Image 1 (cartoon, rainbow, N blue to C red):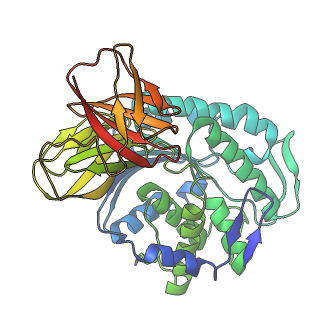
Image 2: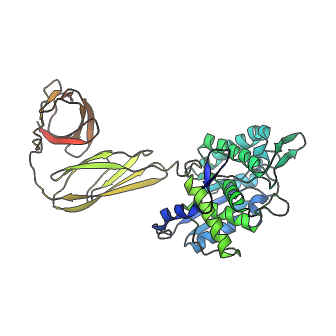
Image 3: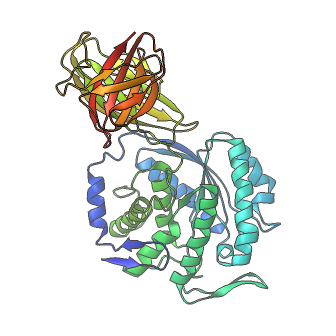
Length: 435
């Protein structure tokens, strides 16, 4: 069963979280302790109940470490001067400090729900702060703190003459806040900590009160839920099972942990999580002792191959010849300027030694190329793609094949390896050219 909201997505009820957690059950959540440095810039929504310290406590009990700074004067905004982080030297000096993995930006609670202030203050100030953060620490991640609506909605006036519509309830105001933060984050390619949407799930599915007596600020349950969301986002690990309860009952803490995990990880693409991380992926085909790779990574500009036998390569799609039989773990590490991802697969080499690999069982043979580069395949009149490799494994070209014919660089010299794939990208055969 799900509750469907007016904005963007449907969220599972508490009972629906059980299935989600089955997916996580096989993960060794705390196998690799992590350290993160985070700067929180906001106001009392961050300082009440000391949200950064709650996140740090969750990290500590999970075996991780959060070192944080915070600057959260009451009533502060991102861009409404003079109470604006964008114009405060204390905020800017903190941003300029080296080593922040994350800088969290929290707007005043009403401003995103007032379109004129959203468009004239929040979004422009976010861009200026984003640029300052990236200038000081190019690999820092800007994380927008998606806050929650007032308990009963209503008209929200930041100052006279700057008011929102009359929201009928919490949900309608939350729609407006989520829309504003998503617009802002998408324009920056920034991440979102979906605290307000996690609140929405808990409130609508359980009726739990997360607001304090002023119907605006968080009570301890609300801050604990926010802390679970921030732990999930900053460390990329679920909160469920964390023994730090912050004085709450185990049942309450577990429910809040599960809600944070479901909203954060269940809709990670909507929150732009890991949108700056490359994705390593590759396929490979073997011919005797020769491995032909096809790099399928995205978002990367540097690659490091480890063939498992002590040999490496930095080519995009190298070819590699093994010298001994065995099982080898082939690993590709794909990186951009800040982050890396890796992929690994096992390859079994059962025969080694130089052999003519251009006569497989299918008897497809490459004839040529002649001096003009024209080449054709014997026993193959279809279409596909020919991959050409140098003796060092460098991919030197990709050439279309039509009606069994192709054109390669004229006057090839030395030893070259090739691989033919069909229209479905499946490997058909491979061989070598000796000139």
